[in-house]
Length: 50
Image 1: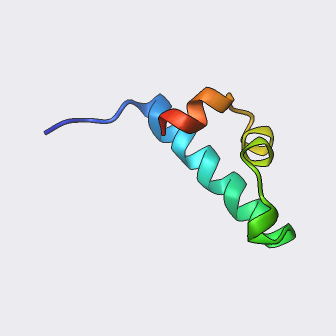
Image 2: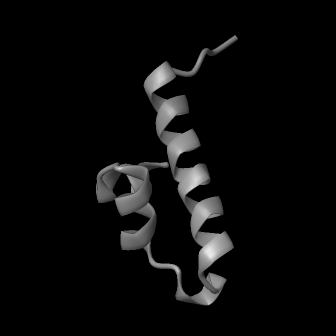
């Protein structure tokens, strides 16, 4: 069985939570990757790796 690094889980959770926050406040079609990474406080490259 393969275990996932805690850092990966933390990044994925931060991205998901950022998207949910944005969806509450902004039309889905207007959400940008920049919005997501700014709220999640992660690098743009992290977004593309996940």
